[in-house]
Image 1 (cartoon, rainbow, N blue to C red):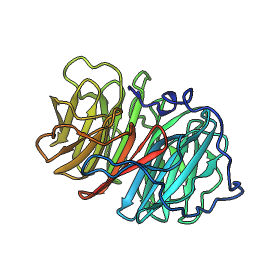
Image 2: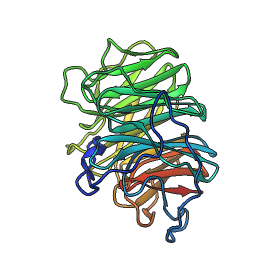
Image 3: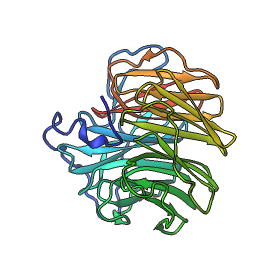
Image 4: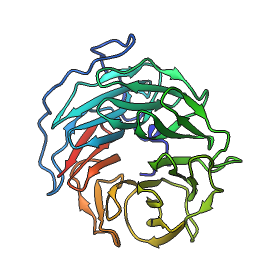
Amino acid sequence: MTRIGRKLIATATRHSGRLAVSAALVAGVVLAVLPPSPASAAAPGWSAPVSVNSPYVASAVSCPSKTFCMAVGYNGPATEGYAAAYHSGTWSAPVTADPDGVLLSVSCASARFCEAADSNGYFLRWNGTSWSAPVLVDPGNTVYSISCLSARFCMAVDVSGQALVFNGTAWQLDANRPFPGGGYDPTQVSCASATFCMAVAVTGYAASWDGSAWSAPVNVVSSPFSPGHFSVSCPATGFCVAVGDDNISATYRGGAWTTESTVAGFYLSCPDKSFCVSVDGQGDSFTWNGSSWSAPVSMGNVRPFDVSCPTRTFCIAVDDSGQAVTYK
């Protein structure tokens, strides 16, 4: 299944109906903790799937530590954005954080600071207890990806090729676009520091941020690339790993990309320069040891949309039916 950076297109028709919301959004919503639901056995390495908000789509997850993660997604026919928090092995009850938008991206710098964005250009902030009301920052644009290093710095990219920067107080559109001219369709951004970020596009292009400006986009893929999903993770300044459709894997070091043809999944998280986990939309995972990718490992009955690994020994992946699996 090709996501093409648009997580909302895959399952809206399959999941009909709406979830009864147990808590209303006023200025914020407090998450109540529930025990994990029973589930069937899974392959070694990955836990059995548990419900985050089944059967509704879980579109993104961010884990700043082994004890805290935040997942976001949308209910029913892509009309309400929900969030659920993971605390030391237990998922909270999902709450409607964005009643009028499809939540597609989230990034957490800590258990007390997360930013999420929706398909209409609204942003929301988690303060450790509740979500803020959505605030319109990027009118008319879908925000596909956010990368937050702290409560004072985040970077986001939208469907039109623009970048948005959070300075600790407010979001602002960056005048220097990473993908000028349109036609790139950016899918993800990853920041290792406030002076180094990498954004990638569905077309196989990438652009880097040096703290003040974006580089010109470069074509990461040397061979013809079918538009699909392209994911990047940068665990250190000057170093990134990217994977995508057409069996593409690439590494960025020394200011240049090196590309190889290998099956390595679509969605990626690297906690350090010699370890990454990638998952595909069919339920397989892959690990990278700094030089090569492993053979695929089945994750069980899941179809992942995102994965987050704060360490080598802990990852969480979420899927298109509101499930989560844990890698330990």
